[in-house]
Image (cartoon, rainbow, N blue to C red; front, side, top):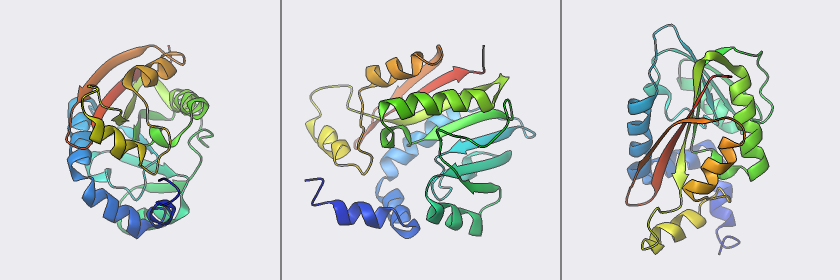
Length: 202
């Protein structure tokens, strides 16, 4: 089935295709924004890094000095063309920033695009560039918390990101890098979504 969807996945690699996907995924992206409101407490002078920022879909949620990075140059070109902030093409497992540069590091809907080793490396890099007094915020969809929701499982397994995970698996991966300070989950009609908060380097 994923092979049949290959043309769709290629379309989503372009900024305009990504924009269409964000509209269709509104029930899930609204829940991501709710987790941002609950957990990402910003000061006006804070510096925030959005890892895997896409076309800057969540930029308006962060009223601070904003940096966005994504591995897709077309997404970065689109974000840079109409949003305030600094946008750079960059691999999330090799962040080109000095240690302790940011007050907050956020990852939204990126983890399911990474394999297990990449998730761990991204978390390490996020902690490295985060100030000791700061916070790393990981927000993503997870496989349904209840086994009764087969349709949500099918939808997520057909996602362009080929690494959907159960919440327990994701927490296990992250906790090998740093202790989890906070967790939250919101159920939704398309996806269940989670927040995992890591304190700055300890």
